[in-house]
Image (cartoon, rainbow, N blue to C red):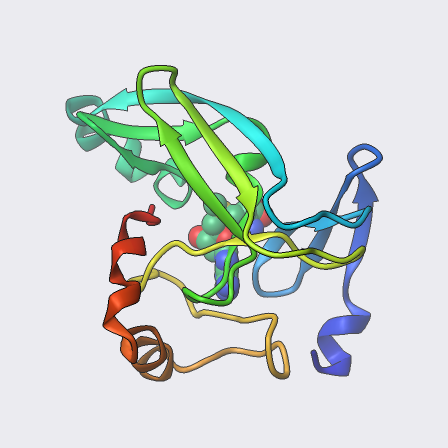
Length: 165
Ligand SMILES: C[S@@+](CC[C@H](N)C(=O)[O-])C[C@H]1O[C@@H](n2cnc3c(N)ncnc32)[C@H](O)[C@@H]1O
């Protein structure tokens, strides 16, 4: 990460496991305050469901559009930490998520060990709607075409494509 970005981070604690840090381009993000091991359940978010018609008429014209997940019959807002996980290009994220439709929940699980201070991220998929920054490399803005190529170099990974907003 370059010096300019590092210096502009500010943080505040949520509890003994998580803190919020504010990145100049990405906004708030969730960072680990303790070490997490691969396979740990990090968070379970109950969701608030918006049926398609309500979303089409109202939701998509509001800030909700940056936060909701696709859900059968409409869209879902993850309550709690789930809405604050920022995006990393597919393959670089350290959390996976599973939708439990019947229970109206999303469960977030670590894909690898996560060290203290690391940002906890999910992948929103290939088609993001903002200039994409990545924690890897120099931590700066990345070219979408480069990431697309990286994500598709091994098409057998594509069964993960349901890990999308
Ligand atoms: C679900 S919100 C995540 C929480 C958000 N950072 C906040 O402060 O409320 C998604 C928004 O975060 C920002 N974001 C997430 N990941 C990003 C990334 N890798 N690069 C740039 N912006 C990102 C984008 O503005 C996006 O619309």
